[in-house]
Length: 437
Image (cartoon, rainbow, N blue to C red):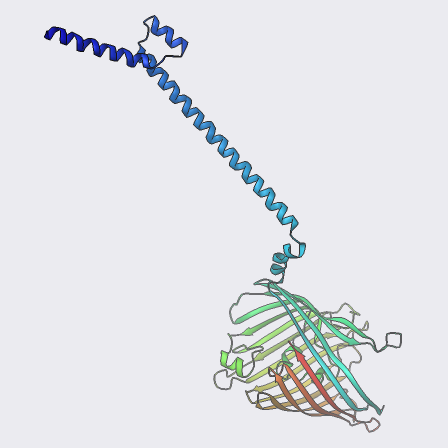
Protein backbone atom coordinates (compact mmCIF):
# COMPACT_ATOMS: atom_id res chain seq x y z
CA UNK A 1 0.00 0.00 0.00
CA UNK A 2 2.81 2.38 0.86
CA UNK A 3 4.60 1.59 -2.42
CA UNK A 4 1.44 2.47 -4.35
CA UNK A 5 1.12 5.77 -2.49
CA UNK A 6 4.73 6.79 -3.20
CA UNK A 7 4.29 5.97 -6.92
CA UNK A 8 1.16 8.10 -7.06
CA UNK A 9 2.90 11.13 -5.52
CA UNK A 10 5.88 10.78 -7.85
CA UNK A 11 3.64 10.54 -10.90
CA UNK A 12 1.73 13.66 -9.80
CA UNK A 13 4.96 15.69 -9.48
CA UNK A 14 6.08 14.66 -12.97
CA UNK A 15 2.72 15.68 -14.40
CA UNK A 16 2.91 19.06 -12.63
CA UNK A 17 6.41 19.74 -13.94
CA UNK A 18 5.36 18.72 -17.42
CA UNK A 19 2.36 21.04 -17.17
CA UNK A 20 4.56 24.05 -16.19
CA UNK A 21 6.82 23.37 -19.13
CA UNK A 22 3.96 23.08 -21.51
CA UNK A 23 2.26 26.14 -20.02
CA UNK A 24 4.99 28.27 -21.46
CA UNK A 25 4.43 28.03 -25.16
CA UNK A 26 7.54 28.02 -27.30
CA UNK A 27 6.45 30.12 -30.25
CA UNK A 28 9.82 30.74 -31.84
CA UNK A 29 10.05 28.06 -34.62
CA UNK A 30 13.82 27.72 -34.37
CA UNK A 31 13.78 27.19 -30.61
CA UNK A 32 10.81 24.82 -30.95
CA UNK A 33 12.68 22.71 -33.51
CA UNK A 34 15.77 22.57 -31.30
CA UNK A 35 13.61 21.35 -28.37
CA UNK A 36 11.97 18.66 -30.52
CA UNK A 37 15.38 17.35 -31.63
CA UNK A 38 16.65 17.35 -28.06
CA UNK A 39 19.31 20.00 -28.64
CA UNK A 40 17.70 22.29 -26.03
CA UNK A 41 15.49 21.47 -23.17
CA UNK A 42 12.22 23.28 -22.81
CA UNK A 43 13.61 25.19 -19.81
CA UNK A 44 16.59 26.40 -21.82
CA UNK A 45 14.37 27.47 -24.69
CA UNK A 46 12.07 29.36 -22.31
CA UNK A 47 15.12 31.12 -20.74
CA UNK A 48 16.26 32.22 -24.21
CA UNK A 49 12.75 33.55 -24.96
CA UNK A 50 12.71 35.51 -21.69
CA UNK A 51 16.09 37.12 -22.49
CA UNK A 52 14.91 38.04 -25.98
CA UNK A 53 11.72 39.62 -24.58
CA UNK A 54 13.75 41.64 -22.04
CA UNK A 55 16.09 42.94 -24.76
CA UNK A 56 13.09 43.87 -26.90
CA UNK A 57 11.53 45.76 -23.99
CA UNK A 58 14.78 47.66 -23.37
CA UNK A 59 15.02 48.52 -27.08
CA UNK A 60 11.44 49.85 -27.13
CA UNK A 61 12.08 51.90 -23.99
CA UNK A 62 15.19 53.49 -25.57
CA UNK A 63 13.26 54.32 -28.73
CA UNK A 64 10.49 55.90 -26.66
CA UNK A 65 13.02 58.03 -24.75
CA UNK A 66 14.52 59.27 -28.01
CA UNK A 67 11.08 60.07 -29.33
CA UNK A 68 10.22 61.96 -26.12
CA UNK A 69 13.49 63.95 -26.34
CA UNK A 70 12.87 64.81 -29.95
CA UNK A 71 9.33 65.82 -29.10
CA UNK A 72 10.60 68.08 -26.30
CA UNK A 73 13.04 69.77 -28.65
CA UNK A 74 10.32 70.25 -31.22
CA UNK A 75 8.00 71.70 -28.57
CA UNK A 76 10.76 74.10 -27.44
CA UNK A 77 11.32 75.21 -31.02
CA UNK A 78 7.60 75.82 -31.42
CA UNK A 79 7.56 77.88 -28.19
CA UNK A 80 10.45 80.01 -29.44
CA UNK A 81 8.62 80.65 -32.70
CA UNK A 82 5.51 81.65 -30.74
CA UNK A 83 7.55 84.06 -28.55
CA UNK A 84 9.06 85.58 -31.66
CA UNK A 85 5.63 86.13 -33.17
CA UNK A 86 4.39 87.71 -29.94
CA UNK A 87 7.44 90.01 -29.79
CA UNK A 88 6.88 91.06 -33.39
CA UNK A 89 3.27 91.82 -32.55
CA UNK A 90 4.19 94.17 -29.63
CA UNK A 91 4.06 97.91 -30.59
CA UNK A 92 7.49 99.33 -31.45
CA UNK A 93 7.33 102.02 -28.74
CA UNK A 94 6.95 99.36 -26.02
CA UNK A 95 9.56 97.12 -27.61
CA UNK A 96 12.12 99.94 -27.69
CA UNK A 97 11.49 101.16 -24.15
CA UNK A 98 14.25 98.99 -22.74
CA UNK A 99 16.75 100.34 -25.25
CA UNK A 100 15.65 103.89 -24.44
CA UNK A 101 16.17 103.34 -20.72
CA UNK A 102 19.69 102.14 -21.41
CA UNK A 103 20.39 105.09 -23.70
CA UNK A 104 19.26 107.63 -21.08
CA UNK A 105 21.37 106.14 -18.32
CA UNK A 106 23.97 108.77 -17.38
CA UNK A 107 22.10 111.40 -19.42
CA UNK A 108 21.64 114.89 -17.89
CA UNK A 109 19.66 117.86 -19.15
CA UNK A 110 20.01 121.35 -17.67
CA UNK A 111 19.46 124.97 -18.60
CA UNK A 112 20.54 128.47 -17.63
CA UNK A 113 18.61 131.60 -18.59
CA UNK A 114 19.11 135.31 -17.92
CA UNK A 115 16.04 137.38 -18.80
CA UNK A 116 16.28 141.12 -18.12
CA UNK A 117 14.50 144.42 -18.23
CA UNK A 118 16.97 147.30 -18.84
CA UNK A 119 16.56 151.04 -18.78
CA UNK A 120 19.53 153.30 -19.30
CA UNK A 121 21.83 155.37 -21.43
CA UNK A 122 24.51 153.94 -23.69
CA UNK A 123 27.48 156.27 -23.36
CA UNK A 124 30.88 156.12 -25.09
CA UNK A 125 29.98 159.37 -26.88
CA UNK A 126 26.67 158.08 -28.19
CA UNK A 127 24.33 159.15 -25.42
CA UNK A 128 21.54 156.88 -26.70
CA UNK A 129 18.72 156.02 -24.33
CA UNK A 130 17.29 152.53 -24.28
CA UNK A 131 14.31 150.86 -22.66
CA UNK A 132 14.05 147.14 -23.45
CA UNK A 133 13.50 143.56 -22.43
CA UNK A 134 16.38 141.25 -23.29
CA UNK A 135 17.49 137.63 -23.24
CA UNK A 136 21.06 137.82 -22.03
CA UNK A 137 21.71 134.10 -21.92
CA UNK A 138 19.88 130.96 -22.98
CA UNK A 139 21.83 127.76 -22.38
CA UNK A 140 20.64 124.20 -22.80
CA UNK A 141 23.20 121.87 -21.23
CA UNK A 142 23.09 118.31 -22.54
CA UNK A 143 25.57 115.78 -21.16
CA UNK A 144 25.95 112.01 -21.22
CA UNK A 145 28.19 109.73 -19.18
CA UNK A 146 29.23 106.76 -21.30
CA UNK A 147 31.70 105.19 -18.89
CA UNK A 148 33.10 106.20 -15.47
CA UNK A 149 36.07 107.72 -17.32
CA UNK A 150 34.38 109.35 -20.33
CA UNK A 151 31.47 111.78 -20.77
CA UNK A 152 30.41 114.38 -23.34
CA UNK A 153 28.64 117.74 -23.28
CA UNK A 154 26.99 120.04 -25.79
CA UNK A 155 25.64 123.50 -24.91
CA UNK A 156 23.75 125.58 -27.49
CA UNK A 157 23.64 129.30 -26.67
CA UNK A 158 20.95 131.81 -27.66
CA UNK A 159 22.33 134.95 -29.29
CA UNK A 160 20.71 137.99 -30.91
CA UNK A 161 22.13 138.97 -34.28
CA UNK A 162 23.09 142.61 -34.86
CA UNK A 163 24.06 142.75 -38.54
CA UNK A 164 22.48 144.96 -41.17
CA UNK A 165 20.80 142.16 -43.12
CA UNK A 166 17.36 140.61 -42.89
CA UNK A 167 18.40 138.72 -39.74
CA UNK A 168 19.15 141.85 -37.72
CA UNK A 169 17.61 141.32 -34.28
CA UNK A 170 16.83 137.65 -34.90
CA UNK A 171 17.41 135.16 -32.10
CA UNK A 172 19.83 132.49 -33.24
CA UNK A 173 21.49 129.49 -31.61
CA UNK A 174 25.23 128.87 -31.66
CA UNK A 175 27.50 126.45 -29.86
CA UNK A 176 29.08 127.53 -26.58
CA UNK A 177 30.51 124.17 -25.51
CA UNK A 178 30.97 120.88 -27.30
CA UNK A 179 33.54 118.54 -25.85
CA UNK A 180 34.46 115.10 -24.62
CA UNK A 181 35.69 114.81 -21.04
CA UNK A 182 38.21 112.17 -19.95
CA UNK A 183 38.30 111.58 -16.19
CA UNK A 184 41.74 110.54 -14.98
CA UNK A 185 42.71 108.66 -11.80
CA UNK A 186 44.14 110.59 -8.87
CA UNK A 187 47.92 110.74 -8.91
CA UNK A 188 50.55 112.44 -6.76
CA UNK A 189 49.09 115.78 -5.57
CA UNK A 190 46.35 115.86 -8.23
CA UNK A 191 42.78 115.07 -7.18
CA UNK A 192 39.90 114.36 -9.58
CA UNK A 193 41.85 115.42 -12.69
CA UNK A 194 40.17 115.49 -16.08
CA UNK A 195 40.73 116.64 -19.67
CA UNK A 196 38.26 118.46 -21.92
CA UNK A 197 38.72 118.27 -25.70
CA UNK A 198 36.66 120.30 -28.20
CA UNK A 199 35.02 123.68 -27.61
CA UNK A 200 36.05 123.82 -23.97
CA UNK A 201 36.26 126.01 -20.90
CA UNK A 202 39.23 128.34 -20.89
CA UNK A 203 41.05 128.37 -17.53
CA UNK A 204 39.85 131.62 -15.98
CA UNK A 205 36.22 132.66 -16.26
CA UNK A 206 34.62 129.38 -15.23
CA UNK A 207 36.61 129.70 -12.01
CA UNK A 208 35.87 133.39 -11.33
CA UNK A 209 32.17 132.96 -12.13
CA UNK A 210 31.97 130.32 -9.38
CA UNK A 211 33.30 132.80 -6.84
CA UNK A 212 31.37 135.83 -8.10
CA UNK A 213 28.03 134.22 -9.01
CA UNK A 214 26.56 137.35 -10.62
CA UNK A 215 27.38 136.74 -14.25
CA UNK A 216 23.68 137.37 -14.86
CA UNK A 217 24.30 141.04 -13.99
CA UNK A 218 26.88 141.09 -16.78
CA UNK A 219 30.33 139.78 -17.65
CA UNK A 220 33.34 139.67 -15.35
CA UNK A 221 36.04 142.38 -15.25
CA UNK A 222 38.40 141.25 -18.02
CA UNK A 223 35.68 139.98 -20.35
CA UNK A 224 33.77 143.24 -19.81
CA UNK A 225 36.84 145.07 -21.09
CA UNK A 226 37.14 142.73 -24.12
CA UNK A 227 40.36 141.02 -23.05
CA UNK A 228 39.02 137.47 -23.65
CA UNK A 229 35.88 135.37 -23.29
CA UNK A 230 35.13 132.05 -21.62
CA UNK A 231 35.48 129.26 -24.22
CA UNK A 232 37.60 128.28 -27.19
CA UNK A 233 38.46 125.34 -29.42
CA UNK A 234 41.28 123.34 -27.89
CA UNK A 235 42.15 121.13 -24.93
CA UNK A 236 42.00 121.91 -21.18
CA UNK A 237 43.43 120.01 -18.21
CA UNK A 238 41.79 120.63 -14.81
CA UNK A 239 42.59 119.25 -11.37
CA UNK A 240 42.02 119.86 -7.69
CA UNK A 241 45.09 119.89 -5.48
CA UNK A 242 45.74 117.79 -2.38
CA UNK A 243 42.29 116.29 -1.83
CA UNK A 244 39.03 118.12 -1.18
CA UNK A 245 37.52 120.37 1.48
CA UNK A 246 35.15 118.75 3.97
CA UNK A 247 31.44 118.39 3.25
CA UNK A 248 30.48 121.09 5.75
CA UNK A 249 32.56 123.73 3.92
CA UNK A 250 31.26 122.65 0.54
CA UNK A 251 27.66 122.76 1.74
CA UNK A 252 27.81 126.09 3.59
CA UNK A 253 30.34 128.04 1.48
CA UNK A 254 31.13 126.71 -2.00
CA UNK A 255 31.29 123.25 -3.58
CA UNK A 256 32.88 124.41 -6.86
CA UNK A 257 36.63 123.81 -7.23
CA UNK A 258 36.82 122.52 -3.62
CA UNK A 259 40.49 121.46 -3.70
CA UNK A 260 41.93 121.33 -0.20
CA UNK A 261 45.07 123.13 -1.33
CA UNK A 262 43.55 124.76 -4.40
CA UNK A 263 43.09 123.87 -8.04
CA UNK A 264 44.65 124.37 -11.44
CA UNK A 265 43.71 124.57 -15.11
CA UNK A 266 45.79 125.00 -18.24
CA UNK A 267 45.45 124.37 -21.95
CA UNK A 268 46.19 125.24 -25.57
CA UNK A 269 43.64 126.87 -27.88
CA UNK A 270 43.03 128.33 -31.32
CA UNK A 271 42.85 131.76 -29.70
CA UNK A 272 39.77 133.30 -31.29
CA UNK A 273 37.19 132.29 -28.70
CA UNK A 274 34.01 130.32 -29.28
CA UNK A 275 32.33 132.87 -31.56
CA UNK A 276 35.17 133.65 -33.99
CA UNK A 277 36.92 131.48 -36.55
CA UNK A 278 40.70 131.20 -36.39
CA UNK A 279 42.45 133.83 -38.51
CA UNK A 280 46.04 132.64 -38.07
CA UNK A 281 47.93 129.45 -37.27
CA UNK A 282 49.10 130.60 -33.85
CA UNK A 283 48.02 128.67 -30.77
CA UNK A 284 47.49 130.38 -27.40
CA UNK A 285 48.76 128.96 -24.10
CA UNK A 286 46.73 129.69 -20.97
CA UNK A 287 47.09 128.56 -17.38
CA UNK A 288 45.58 129.18 -13.95
CA UNK A 289 47.02 128.15 -10.58
CA UNK A 290 44.98 128.62 -7.40
CA UNK A 291 46.43 128.00 -3.93
CA UNK A 292 44.46 127.59 -0.70
CA UNK A 293 47.34 128.29 1.72
CA UNK A 294 45.58 127.75 5.08
CA UNK A 295 42.77 125.21 4.62
CA UNK A 296 42.43 124.52 8.36
CA UNK A 297 42.78 128.11 9.62
CA UNK A 298 41.30 130.32 6.87
CA UNK A 299 39.62 127.81 4.51
CA UNK A 300 37.95 130.49 2.39
CA UNK A 301 41.19 132.25 1.43
CA UNK A 302 42.58 131.51 -2.05
CA UNK A 303 45.34 133.08 -4.13
CA UNK A 304 45.23 132.74 -7.92
CA UNK A 305 47.38 133.55 -10.92
CA UNK A 306 46.38 133.53 -14.59
CA UNK A 307 48.87 133.70 -17.43
CA UNK A 308 48.16 133.88 -21.19
CA UNK A 309 50.65 134.11 -24.02
CA UNK A 310 50.02 134.02 -27.76
CA UNK A 311 48.82 136.15 -30.64
CA UNK A 312 45.59 138.06 -31.12
CA UNK A 313 43.14 136.54 -33.58
CA UNK A 314 44.21 138.47 -36.69
CA UNK A 315 46.25 137.48 -39.72
CA UNK A 316 48.82 140.12 -38.66
CA UNK A 317 49.33 138.13 -35.41
CA UNK A 318 49.58 140.98 -32.88
CA UNK A 319 51.05 140.09 -29.48
CA UNK A 320 48.64 139.10 -26.75
CA UNK A 321 49.55 138.34 -23.16
CA UNK A 322 47.86 138.47 -19.77
CA UNK A 323 49.16 138.45 -16.20
CA UNK A 324 46.47 138.45 -13.54
CA UNK A 325 46.69 138.16 -9.77
CA UNK A 326 43.51 137.35 -7.85
CA UNK A 327 42.73 137.11 -4.11
CA UNK A 328 39.42 135.75 -2.84
CA UNK A 329 37.86 135.11 0.53
CA UNK A 330 34.65 133.10 0.82
CA UNK A 331 32.49 132.58 3.88
CA UNK A 332 28.94 131.50 4.54
CA UNK A 333 27.93 135.15 5.02
CA UNK A 334 30.39 137.12 2.89
CA UNK A 335 32.49 136.88 -0.28
CA UNK A 336 35.30 139.32 -1.14
CA UNK A 337 37.61 139.41 -4.17
CA UNK A 338 40.34 141.67 -5.50
CA UNK A 339 42.37 141.39 -8.72
CA UNK A 340 45.09 143.21 -10.59
CA UNK A 341 45.74 142.83 -14.33
CA UNK A 342 48.55 143.84 -16.64
CA UNK A 343 48.95 142.76 -20.23
CA UNK A 344 49.23 143.56 -23.91
CA UNK A 345 46.72 143.32 -26.74
CA UNK A 346 43.60 141.18 -26.50
CA UNK A 347 41.95 138.04 -27.85
CA UNK A 348 40.49 139.77 -30.91
CA UNK A 349 43.84 141.23 -31.93
CA UNK A 350 42.27 144.70 -32.03
CA UNK A 351 45.47 146.38 -30.80
CA UNK A 352 48.89 145.81 -29.24
CA UNK A 353 48.52 148.32 -26.41
CA UNK A 354 50.00 147.79 -22.98
CA UNK A 355 47.11 147.72 -20.53
CA UNK A 356 46.36 147.37 -16.85
CA UNK A 357 43.51 147.54 -14.40
CA UNK A 358 42.04 146.24 -11.17
CA UNK A 359 38.70 145.23 -9.75
CA UNK A 360 37.05 144.58 -6.36
CA UNK A 361 33.87 142.64 -5.66
CA UNK A 362 31.88 142.02 -2.48
CA UNK A 363 28.77 140.07 -1.54
CA UNK A 364 27.08 140.16 1.86
CA UNK A 365 24.72 137.24 2.56
CA UNK A 366 22.90 137.89 5.86
CA UNK A 367 20.42 135.11 5.09
CA UNK A 368 20.24 132.36 2.45
CA UNK A 369 17.59 134.14 0.42
CA UNK A 370 19.09 137.64 0.33
CA UNK A 371 22.38 139.15 -0.92
CA UNK A 372 23.74 142.65 -1.34
CA UNK A 373 26.46 143.04 -3.99
CA UNK A 374 28.92 145.73 -5.00
CA UNK A 375 31.75 145.99 -7.52
CA UNK A 376 34.34 148.53 -8.64
CA UNK A 377 36.42 148.22 -11.87
CA UNK A 378 39.27 150.38 -13.10
CA UNK A 379 40.66 149.75 -16.58
CA UNK A 380 43.29 151.55 -18.68
CA UNK A 381 43.13 150.34 -22.33
CA UNK A 382 46.39 152.07 -23.31
CA UNK A 383 49.12 152.87 -20.81
CA UNK A 384 50.71 155.30 -23.29
CA UNK A 385 47.68 157.57 -23.40
CA UNK A 386 46.30 159.80 -20.69
CA UNK A 387 42.69 160.21 -19.72
CA UNK A 388 41.47 157.12 -21.58
CA UNK A 389 40.65 155.10 -18.46
CA UNK A 390 37.21 154.07 -17.33
CA UNK A 391 35.72 153.32 -13.92
CA UNK A 392 32.70 151.11 -13.33
CA UNK A 393 30.45 151.09 -10.25
CA UNK A 394 27.92 148.32 -9.65
CA UNK A 395 25.50 148.02 -6.74
CA UNK A 396 22.65 145.57 -6.41
CA UNK A 397 20.44 143.32 -4.35
CA UNK A 398 19.49 139.70 -5.04
CA UNK A 399 16.60 137.53 -3.89
CA UNK A 400 17.34 133.79 -4.04
CA UNK A 401 13.92 132.15 -4.36
CA UNK A 402 15.17 128.61 -5.00
CA UNK A 403 18.67 127.41 -4.12
CA UNK A 404 21.18 130.14 -3.38
CA UNK A 405 22.89 131.56 -6.51
CA UNK A 406 20.80 129.29 -8.75
CA UNK A 407 17.31 130.73 -9.21
CA UNK A 408 17.24 134.39 -8.27
CA UNK A 409 16.04 137.89 -9.10
CA UNK A 410 18.71 140.60 -9.21
CA UNK A 411 18.14 144.37 -9.23
CA UNK A 412 21.29 146.38 -9.96
CA UNK A 413 22.56 149.79 -10.97
CA UNK A 414 25.57 149.97 -13.31
CA UNK A 415 27.49 153.22 -13.98
CA UNK A 416 30.62 153.69 -16.12
CA UNK A 417 32.60 156.89 -15.82
CA UNK A 418 34.92 157.69 -18.77
CA UNK A 419 37.92 159.88 -18.03
CA UNK A 420 37.77 161.11 -21.61
CA UNK A 421 35.35 164.01 -21.20
CA UNK A 422 34.32 163.79 -24.84
CA UNK A 423 32.53 160.53 -24.00
CA UNK A 424 29.27 160.35 -22.12
CA UNK A 425 28.92 157.99 -19.17
CA UNK A 426 27.04 154.70 -19.31
CA UNK A 427 24.10 154.46 -16.91
CA UNK A 428 21.74 151.54 -16.47
CA UNK A 429 19.23 150.08 -14.08
CA UNK A 430 18.44 146.42 -14.64
CA UNK A 431 16.12 143.73 -13.28
CA UNK A 432 17.22 140.19 -14.13
CA UNK A 433 15.63 136.80 -13.64
CA UNK A 434 18.08 133.91 -13.53
CA UNK A 435 16.64 130.42 -13.97
CA UNK A 436 19.00 127.49 -13.57
CA UNK A 437 18.75 123.70 -13.41
